[in-house]
Image 1 (cartoon, rainbow, N blue to C red):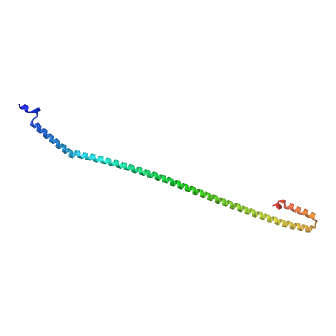
Image 2 (image 1 turned 180 degrees about the horizontal axis):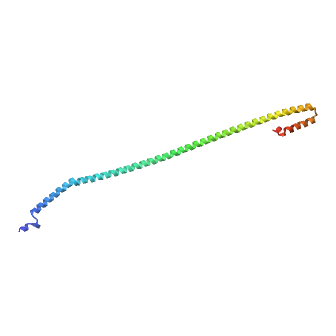
Length: 174
């Protein structure tokens, strides 16, 4: 009957070994939890926090880059406006210089024309003075001929006409 007291072939030694094994496994689990699982959990938590921090930094950097891009685009637009303004001012200065140079050229041309007119007027006066001198010379020659010839009025008219023909009609008309 002794065999009956053992249920499923369990004896005290087997139960004792099983309890000791369970206690050993429990302590092994506690030891492993303390020495292995907790550091791994801590490492995973640290890694998760590091990745979250890097993602936050990347998002911040992305925002900063977008802000810098917007700032640079604004600066480029400002520079384009300044360049256009500088070019506009340069065009205006060039137009003013061109107008000034054109005005100076017109003034110079007017002075040249005025000088030419004055020179032409002087030449005309000299020519008139020369004609007057010739007329005086002709008149004195006629007077000498008239006095020397002592001729009548008809002969005197022919002498005047002959003298006029010698001088030319254009001299008298100008």
